[in-house]
Figure 1: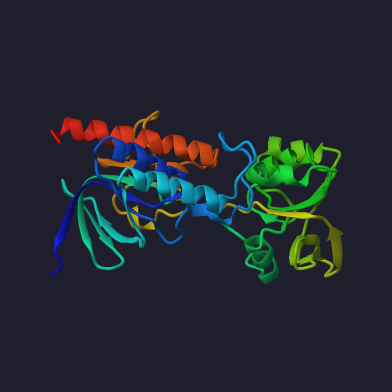
Figure 2: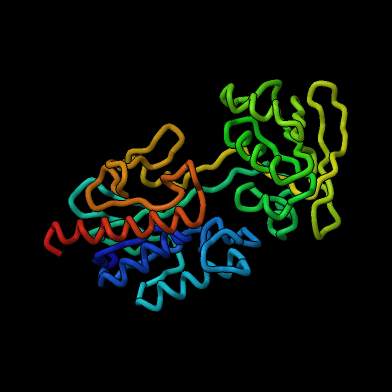
Length: 316
């Protein structure tokens, strides 16, 4: 049997939320241990340019920002570990967690910052331009700025897709919405908003066949009408996917209260507390509204402060 490691504060997942929590926890002498997760640095590592995070007047790449946050957390002696937590047991007074290398950790406090993963269509061409920073994005608020005065395409039919299409319409000369079915899934008010926006064209019964480009950037989208079977090409420089996010919370579902879509629910509004005393949440695994790096960082700070107060209350 492997030896049990006891820690004051375990942070599960990295990204702006996890690293900010680590910085605050480390400065409070909580000696945090962080497991970076399946995607060290989180969603921002797939973001080429970040221009809306305060303190970077010239912008910064997502991976570069995450390396800086990691370095700052390490400067205060956060034990940052490559790897991920595979299982938890929050049924007793001790918070038990197991890492992928078999390490069993008993933590006085746990901060969950596992984030959420954007859903994509899964097309080879989509993934190519996503990973090569050339015109595919799952966040219009983050990346729409780069397509000012250009034509863009967005896929999706829910409230988020309508909201993002409307946001893009203020920046772009034209926005084409691709809706797979013959109607929106969005609320009536959101659907009407995009339908009443002059530079948004909505194509119902339409699937994406391929994202087109020259290997450097996106130049258009090949689409197919799923009723007539007719294919056509829509010219654009930006292709946005707004078909939802999946919070990375599966391993907590037996112990932590989740909503119907898997997001962690706060036990007390205005705090980072979950329904399990001593377990806190930060970032996109609980936030389905804002999903920005700056808001994730803010909740990371809250989680560390809440964890510190909890430790004080139990005499640690």
